[in-house]
Image 1 (cartoon, rainbow, N blue to C red):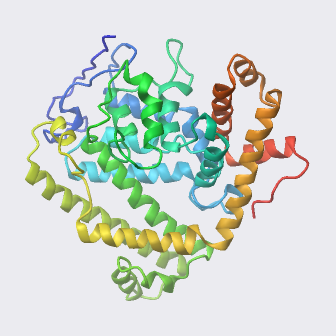
Image 2 (image 1 turned 120 degrees about the horizontal axis):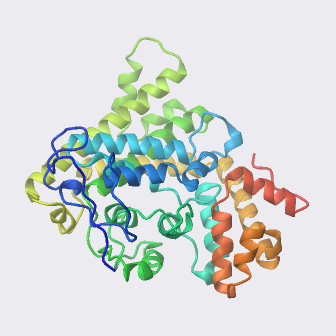
Length: 408
């Protein structure tokens, strides 16, 4: 199939905002196109159209009521998957701007990277993976790709969002090239895109674009910092605990030298400084790596054999220690573990009930399930449950079962 190559009216060396683009920015070359031909847009670049399609997707809206760390009813000010994605997009655009990359691609990938998360975040993911074991399991990165490639149904001429090659490539490689990797989920990802690969080769053995690498790094920066914020506000982490991770020690000391301020301002003083420190290190280290590589095109980034947009060695080590701190003090906190354990029960129960009684699903899902053999029907049920918000999953469980676990 010959794919459409989209062009736009801006100069090849300028971003839509008029800023100079590096020769290795993804949009310095015409887009490699979409799977299904569409007319050019007179007012937006192909990558801006991709961003807008993600932003207007049903899956993106559902992220409002999907867990980051705390379930939706535990507090109005805690992050959810949507606010997390917006914070990732802001950080990714900042990194991309400093490195003269295409900000719109970095933003599109940031907004899309968590579309596949099921209700209750990683707890729901664990439950779905176990419940769908014989059907291939479940991985939220795989599901994000399936959503934009096939599951969203908005357009008359095709399923999915018909995103450009550049956005699909970056989404598939959110954690680096999946081909041949031994990371959990990567084998499932390769299997999930195998049929798609026959129509559009996403170069699964190559590294992603610089913009995709910026979005992945922004994801790390965002969740590390905003989970500190949420953990402090929830009372699961004490302010004095922040002296333990070496990355935070000088920041905490600087905040404490400020005039007397209330707890909320102290918390924000720490988290905003962490973002600043991590972004500055990422930009500095990435500039150094780019200078050494001297890439002349986006494909030089893909052929680099390793990440080009990255933290320095010492900061990467400090970030790993900070993550270990968050796992020990927040994600494995007794209160969080207890709530997420009960959330897993809800997801497992729903999958089991729909498999036993597909008629419990809405009519349109039941009609599709009736035409499928058992393995594919299990995958369809997984898609239905994965698309649920936290509150809809709780509501469905209450409708179908006599007792529903309290997520408190």
